[in-house]
Amino acid sequence: AAAFAPASLPVKRVSNVEVNAEKSASLPFMNRPPLLDGSMAGDVGFDPLGLSTIDDLGIDLYWLREAEIKHARVAMLAVAGILQVEIFGPAPGCEAATAKCQMDAFWQIWNSHPQYIAFALIMITITEMISGIATTTGRETGLRAPGDFGLDPLGFGKGDPEKFERLKAQEIANGRLAMWAASGLLMQGCSTHQGGIENLMQSLSDNAF
Image 1: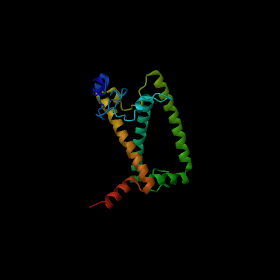
Image 2: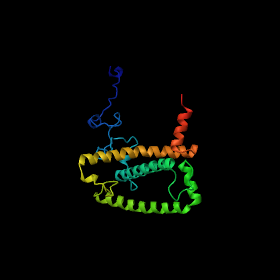
Image 3: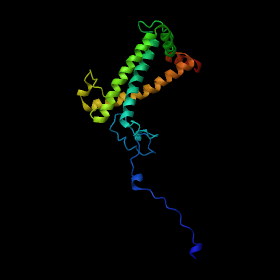
Image 4: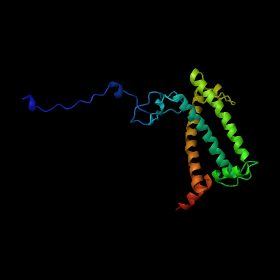
């Protein structure tokens, strides 16, 4: 009789850890990455690719956070610089850069004053060396937060700690937005050879009702 009894269906066992795992604030349908506990400014548990778990080849969460903050700050300066030059014109000594598109203006400077580009590359190299030493030392000692170079001329860090944490969250939020903006400006500059504002006005004109 047992031979004719229906076979029991396999039972899917789900661990209590999986059931009770904390969900990501940004992706509620996914579990929160274990290392993203909300202690870092701007951390909302967004890591669908699992990059925060990388821990080989000298890359870990500390290194990734340092890179994010660095690129966020560079992007904010880049976007502000691109728009400032397009609105007010080139800086003194860079009069050859007449193009509204800053991608084209770069090559104008390259052709007329290549020493400017060489100097910029030297300064970038020096900055990267200082940043690399600070990152390596901070990761080994644990005495330095990612992106912290002790540069606080207005003394924000000496005031209200809650306000300072809010400022750090605003910095990374605006920096992430700036990275998208800088990518857009570079892409549209290379594809349309128009400035960012010029391209925006052209788009509004072409699509106006």
